[in-house]
Length: 256
Image (cartoon, rainbow, N blue to C red; front, side, top):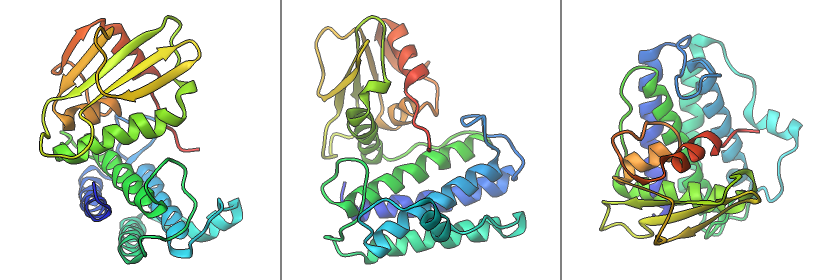
């Protein structure tokens, strides 16, 4: 996906996140993030938006210190001002990304075509997944366009677990193959293979014959399922279902 489309997705997700938070109320629990209330999740995403914007806006090429990060984000406001605070940070991030030159140099933490491409993509998916979390606090979680789903699967598998595969271990080596059945007009891969071993995981694009478990479905559903934001009962699971269960148990991305 192009940078502009990621920014558009970020903008839409932020607006939908606010709508879901208003409907749920700040004290509501978030089923997909059981350690957080709606209030805490809004605070988290607002924090991340300000943190991300600081790198792009200032062309920051090294990681912020704790004091610099605190200054960039500022304190959390009281409840009556929380959604206004969130929207201000969200708008500032969108505007910063749209205004930044394509060759902006800044720190980033996953492989990307450019630092700007990284931040636009990462914040689009950060906000989309947490939009899903807040919708889950109200009722049904909306899906995403097939191309955004495909892109998000690729970021999760090739970005996060392509660089941090040691965290995804299996006592007995096994393979999980993931196939999106839609999005034919979208650029990029539609299939991936996750190989888990006692030493960690390796991820490749494309399918592998003879995988221990194969997961097929629409890109939107796969995206949310691989992020553990929806169940997999209605998806096509072939082979050893315990391999998929192992993924859902151990594939977690946490803010640290």
